[in-house]
Image 1 (cartoon, rainbow, N blue to C red):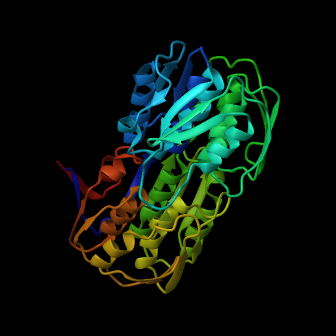
Image 2: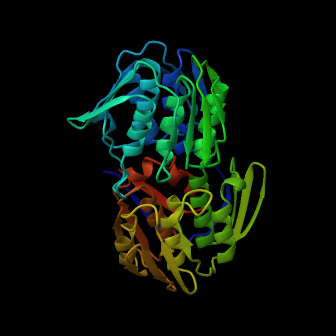
Image 3: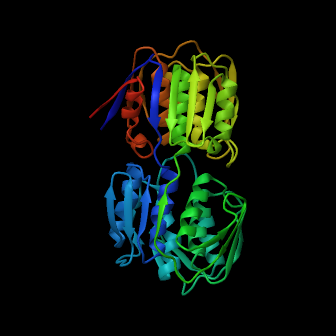
Length: 416
């Protein structure tokens, strides 16, 4: 099993290219199931979750051509309308084939999904929304089995904000008869990117990026070309790394308008940030002030950046409160940070972080995707050597992380 070995204490300088967003690419790949015509995508990152999704689509009969970050998907001849457990057990986003399969073919059998163990993320809203559109759904032997002669547009209010739920129901509604209104919908940029791709395919969607999305069903969707939006979480992670280590880094293919809450907190911590339409430049002397963090759905502070800012606060001047409101198990990185010399106390869904002068290198274990990133950030500033085990989590969400960091001056290598 691969490990990362990091020698801390080296500032980051230079330029780094931000990949296309994993959380946008996954639903967009699944949207190819909605049409007989080909969907061509650019900006598809080489990640474990992307590879798993492509393998699942190929299993169903989608013909996939991949070259670098370009992917062409042809779903004209689907041979299976099932997502088997063995193919989806590692990745929660596999549920996103449910809506497209049901809308186009009237049947889907999808294994209940897996993914990071960061907390309970039930799929009941996906099911209730499809039932509101006329689907018959049964859960048996760990599978969701859904049937519908024709989905019918409906008004559906989500009692909690769910990104994948919004995406699944929006895709299903594109081929439903009549109009569907999704209320309390997720506003994340990745939801907007999916909507923009669906509109290029011929869907009629209004309100993406607001809490009310209206979809007027059409008879069929067509082929399209689409560039996947940049990965705001990858960009945020490199920005925190630069702030912590000191230095000057330009992030190319990055959009500041997707990172308002993160940029505000980095400026509060003492970093200097400038941006234009397609890049962000951050500089820091490494002397940071503690910042309080409270996660909430977009456009508030993203839960996927919570662990990285906890790492920042471990070496910042002062005491910070980090409050997690989205997932109940998203403090698993705390125990590993304590091994590096951090001072953190957890009280319910809030961590109290007392900044220390230095972290000390140690062997730590990654527990989930963003926790893995936070341990890399801590290792970049810790004295001596830090070894991070179980980094397969990182490969699910960060493209060539050690290569990109090495190019910026970090001393980091992968050991097989």
